[in-house]
Image (tube, rainbow, N blue to C red; front, side, top):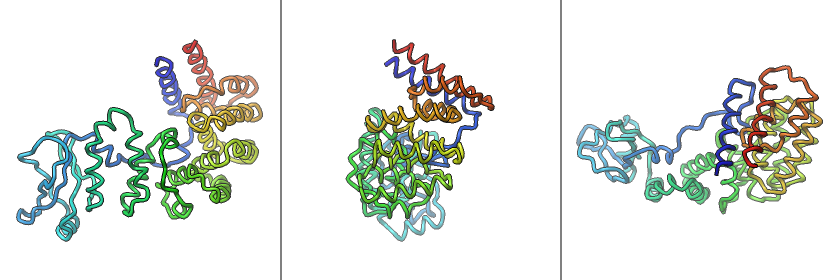
Length: 348
């Protein structure tokens, strides 16, 4: 337990000290995700369905209380005219409303048709368990919605799965196979998680397309490049490690930022991937560092963020043979080596 705490602390320290460096953005996203409906419900005391009261000027009234105390004066807000008209035209629909505490204002989470309401009613009883015992049950619940007839619910499921740690994502029972057509049709927000799910599908026919998309994304340095790397590693295992090493990581013509996105994917697989592939990733990364010491700061950032200290020896060798011009890069490398030594001492 102490070792786990120290590992988390060291990773946090490394991330904190690199906050002002040239670290690239996440390989899978170029945005900060908004809270999902589950996040909002977990943080709320009261959860209700509400509809406009036709005889009261459009004010909302509670039609079903899902969680929280009984309310004598709920003080619900008046919906906008378009929402009110839509609700009045659809008597079975409602708004999902939450509030953190009795003294706080109500917040509209979602417009809920019959399908949406049915899912919410299944979720609310599980919120205490999801809060206490981690997220596996939560993410499996949404994995099971990936083939739901409702496009809105399928998108919500993807938003939730997009929050899962990759180790959790790999452990889910993914009965729905994500097609390449779904990936191609997705917007930039949803494409990374769909790429990861396609990689976990085991669809042999998808491998050629993933290889081609990886090459196209590397040439354009797109934000979801890392997702394609992980998908290929899942599909081809150790063979993909060698391909990515020779084709991309050792290509000095590629920008460092592009290769760092690939190293982020390597770091994720090193921590959470198939054991054989993870071991090959660690060995290959060390070999790449020996040949390309300029990549040491990128490895320090990405493997350090994952709490993976397997590159300490290669990092130390890189520091001995290469002079880093940027002080932030030198600090990243030295900090990684120092923190890895602390972890080693703590585990003895």
